[in-house]
Image (cartoon, rainbow over all chains, first blue to last red; front, side, top):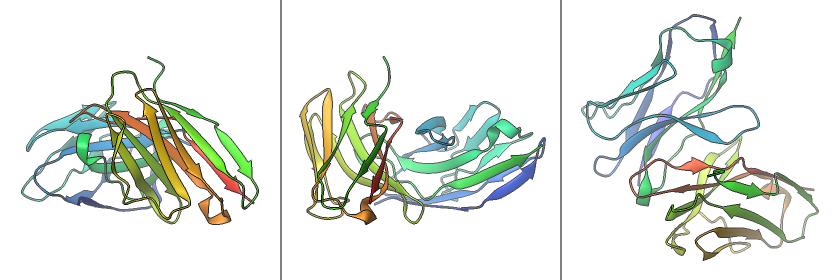
Length: 111
Length: 112
């Protein structure tokens, strides 16, 4: 089955700092890759996705590139805001395979 | 579409009682997933259905847990009898093949 490794945090940054959350995965074949975000008290929401190698997913200033050679899908944002404080989940899979989640990365942005 | 709808949002029950969690997936989605989230274990896939048929229940922790999907618009996750270690947030999600999953708001279960 699939598995994912990402730092749990908490990761604490100042507003307008550059963000990188690393994600590496193991999977059978070449799954789609997703980043989900969970705000306090809510369910998970899709942030961005990439369906094949070298695809770049982007949304709300966040970006991640599907790197098949390094089995990675690192999340980046050039200038974070307080409202980005949340838990971020990297997940390979989709559809019939379901999604494989880790514990997520807790991000705290300070004003 | 209103998205994936779960009920109740919060449930507090006594140890030994039966608990039933409910989920209405997005219309047209043919996959439905039940997840459990705890601080210790993160998000765990419990079971998923395709076209109302259970495909993989290997994540169901023990026989006290059961899930059904009697039709395309409704699924239940039942715990009988419940135990304090079952306390968690339970999420339902639905998707179409090879597309992203959409999650409900979750049910926060507390077993005392």
